Image 1 (cartoon, rainbow, N blue to C red):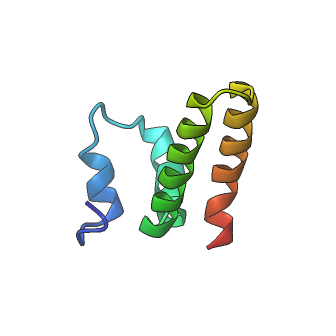
Image 2: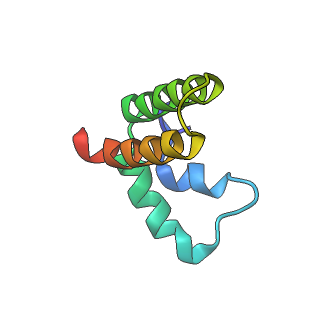
Image 3: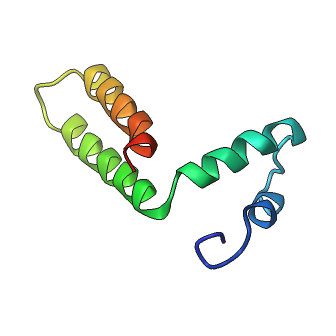
Length: 78
C-alpha cells in the first residue's frame, strides 16, 4: 500500500489482525527502514537459503542463523 502511494498509518490500520496500538510506533519505524529494494534483497536471501537447505551437506540451523543475521543487517546498508 505504501509503495502504491498510500501512507504508512493507513497501511497499518488496514492490517488484519489489527496491530496492537503499543506496537504501531515500532511498526512505523520499521516501515521507513525497509524500503522496497531492501525487502527484495531480503526475499532473495531467503530464496537462496531455502535452496541451500534443500541441498545435502550443510546443517540447516547454520544456514538459517547466517541468513537471519544477513537479513537483520540489510536495512542498515541502504
